[in-house]
Length: 270
Image (cartoon, rainbow, N blue to C red; front, side, top):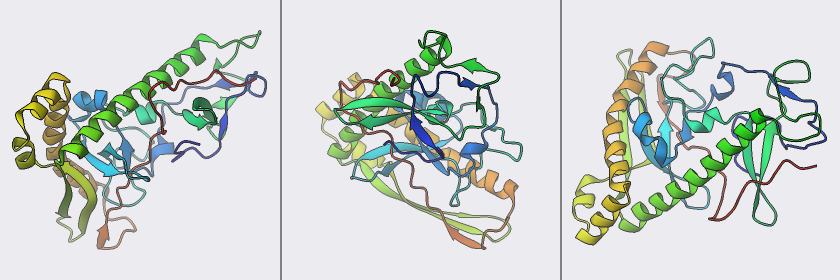
């Protein structure tokens, strides 16, 4: 099954089991309160770079993926406030797909899962998942289409990251944030593009990145790093809480669903 992160009870969507279930809309993001970093697709860089620091992290299995930094401490998301509101204009697609998620099934198929612990899942009110005949409602079909597009963008982003790794331009990032109240946070284990290494690339590699639009992704990644200071400001505004005076951030992100080109999400099971 795919990385579940804040999915407490993910199960395969079943046309019979979930026939009468509905989704009651919720504007709260309390489910992501403990996510201090999240996977980000390349297509999201344009909007995300305006508010978040975009870095790269090594996933289980050795693959590298881009992530947005949401906090400096373990299990703390500085973009979710005390009333479960997301306090940035752009909300990552990783969050917006909830309570749905894709899971890898035997036979190289991707199955659709739903978090049965989602408070908005009920049988009384909200958007129905299936119609009277057991077919997908427009609401569910929109969700499935979103997941399919998300998966396609994941594959494109995976290819982009492989190029960066093969080019040898990623270096480990090490930074220290000192707050005025004496607290200190070390950011380690994450990677950024080294501009000197990027300039040293052969012309053909640079041209290839430019023609594919991926050089622009690198530029937005580098631009976004200035948002690290804003993250420190959010930390200062949040207050010390129960944290010790000195803490090390563990910003390892969730691993996105594993996929290879050609895999498609299957219909809900019957």
